[in-house]
Every structure is written in C-alpha cells, then in structure tokens.
Amino acid sequence: MHNFFTALYSFLNGRKLLSFMLFFTMLGCLSFFALKLQFSEDITRLIPTNDKTNITTKVLSQLNFADKITVKISLKNNGSPEDATEAATLFLSDLNASSKEYVAKVQGKLDDKNLQETFDFVFNNLPLFLDKTDYESIQNKIQNDSISKIVETNYKSLISPTGIVTRDFILKDPLGISFIALKKMQQLSIGDGFQLHDGFVMTKDKKHLLLFITPKLPTNETDKNSLFVAQLNTIKDKINSQFKNKVSLSFFGATPIAVANATQIKADAQWTSIFAGISLILLLVLFYKNLSSPLLIFIPSLFGAAFALAIMYFTKGSVSAISLGISCVLLGETTDYSIYVLTHLRNNKDIKLLYKDITKPLILCGITTSITFLCLFFVNSEALKDLAIFASLSVVSTSIFHWSYFLWFINLNKMTLKKVH
Picture 1 (cartoon, one colour):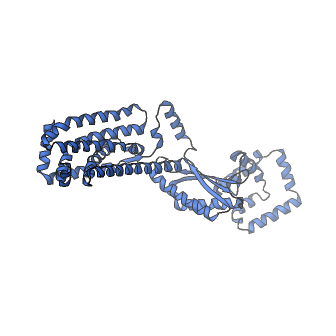
Picture 2 (cartoon, helix red, strand yellow; picture 1 turned 60 degrees about the vertical axis):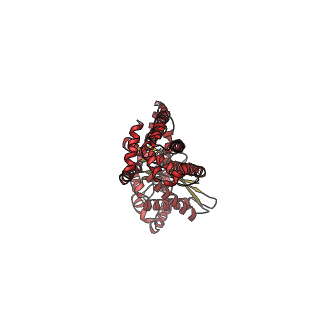
Picture 3 (cartoon, one colour; picture 1 turned 45 degrees about the vertical axis):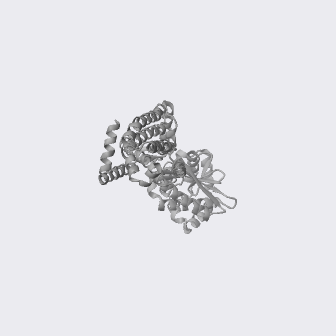
C-alpha cells in the first residue's frame, strides 16, 4: 500500500499546478456542501431515548398549550388595571405591526366580533340562562326609578366615545338584561381564578393580565424564531420603558426557551472551537518556532472536518450542534497525525522509506479511533450518534489526506522543511 501513496506523491509533486487546482476544487466542493448542512440546537437530542421517552415527547408535542408563548403584564405599586389593559393594547398593536408573519393567533382578548356573536347568542336564548333570582333582579330593573337611571346611563354612554361600540347593544337590550346571563357565562368560560376586564383576561385580584400567542413556526425552527423572539424583546423593552413605574411585561414559553438554548449552544460550540484552535496553535508555534508549521498541521484537520460535514449533508441533512461542540476534542487527535509525520520526516528524509514507515501505523490509528467513536452508536442519543459519524469520517479522511497531500504541502514550504530537517 505504501507504494501506491509513494507514486501518488510523485504524481502530485511533478504536477504542481494540477495538484493545486485539484486540491482547491475538492476543498471548495466539500466546503460548499458542508455550509449547506443544517445545524440542530435541540438540547433533547443529547438525552438517551427509549419507548417511554418517545411516548412522552409525542404527548408533549401534541399538547395544544405546549407551543404557546405566555405574555404576562403585572401591575407595579403605581399601576392600575387600566394601565395593564393599555399596555396590552399597545403590545398587540406593535405585535401585529412587526411580527404578524410569525403569529398564528393571540388569545386573551375578547374582540368586538366575538363579543357581538356572544351577545346575540345570549339574547336569542335568554330564558335558558336565567333562574328565579334573575327574574327578581329584572323585576327591580323595570321599576320607574330604575328605568330612569338606566336611560340616563345609556344616554351618557351613547354620547361618549364608547357609544360606537355600545350603540348596538343598547338598542337591542336597553335594560341590559342580557348582561345578567353574560356574567354567568364569564364565570363558566374563564374560571374562578380569572375575570374579564375591558375585554382582557386578568387574575381575580386584577394584578396580572395574560395573553397567549400561538406561533406559526414550530419550536425547532430556531433560526427564524430567533428573529421573532428578538422582536418580542424589543416590544417588551419599549412597553416596560413607557410604563416604567406602572406595569412590567414579560413572556415565556417553549419558543423563547428553544431560541435561548440554541443561542447558548452555538456560542458554546464556537468558543470551544476557537479556544481549542488558538491553544493548539500557540503550543505548536512555541515548539516549532514558526507560524507556518502549525498552519500546515491544521490543514488535514480542516480537510477532514469539511469532508465529514459534506458526507453528513448528503446522508442526514442535519447535525446536532452539540455534537460538533464536543468534537473539538478531535483537533488534538488529528493534529497528532501531522506531528507524527513531521517527526518521522525529521529522522527520515527519504520519501519512500517514510511512506513505508508511516502508512500502516496511520491506517491502524485511523481505524482504531474510528471504531472507538462508532461505539457511541450503542447509546440511544441522536447527538452522540452524530458525533460518532462526524468523528469517524473526520479521522479516516484526515488519515487519507496525510498519505496524499500533506507531504506535498510540506515539500512546498521551504521554511518548514528547514526547521524539520
């Protein structure tokens, strides 16, 4: 086998322009497909799965409330329920203006259309909602003095700005008998712990107003949802600043949590890779006393990573970002191969003898390391399986790169050769 790689080296070394073109073409194609790979930031992929956990995940994903974003507007010491409803109205207005494409619906506010439909339904079926005590209340309403007060109240309502909304209700039910039944429906529909205030759902003590947003996008689409969550944070900051001493707005739910996890995972993976790379470069620079040698040592590792990601793009289409963060340990493993080759090159300058010495050991190292990582397939964790595939492909391709292009790159770098020799 070493004869084949010796011949390959001679071929590449004798055709430098073609070798350059071939290398950069391969690297460009691999990088192109590697960059198209989708990264999953789902932290649950790290958790081992079985039949019970799959059932639990399925049930949770099918719960109607699981995908909701809960918006809570809480009163401060100087706030009033009217401040909460005003803040909620402003929130809905800004949400509709900036994030309409991300929102399927918003619950927690009774709009005019639903209110009219509910009123018509109650009015047309009024006897079904009334009991003996209600008729006694109606008897009091039809007394002369009560009618006078009701008419006066209705007149004031009609000439006020709210008359646009109350006009139809007053014309259909001037005595407000239907509202007796509506109060009963309010208790049935909202519950004992909540009540309606100016069309919004509030807690019984009127200290908290609740809105429920149903996003259009699923929770796992964190790239697009991150824009949505950023817009929600902007609206939140605006309202909290405008109602500084009156109300406090906050939100929580599966979508913001998923976005926060994704952001943290990306940051951890990036900083882990950067820290590992810089640490190794500094260590190698101190050892080799130049910058070109560490850069050459990293070329096989970068090629192997690009190859592994490109293959995973065609076979899986996505990969766990957590597994890539863990795979930074491969930098130390794959750079060892380069150091191993450089060490042998220092003691043996004959290329034929060098290939004879390093071919079998590198093959053995690549195979044993790949098998070690492939053992992760016995763990029922999607992220660890992604790590196994990425690590095994990366190690094998890095080994192949050492047999083909690495020595050719060293030969091109005169400074490195002088240091090594």
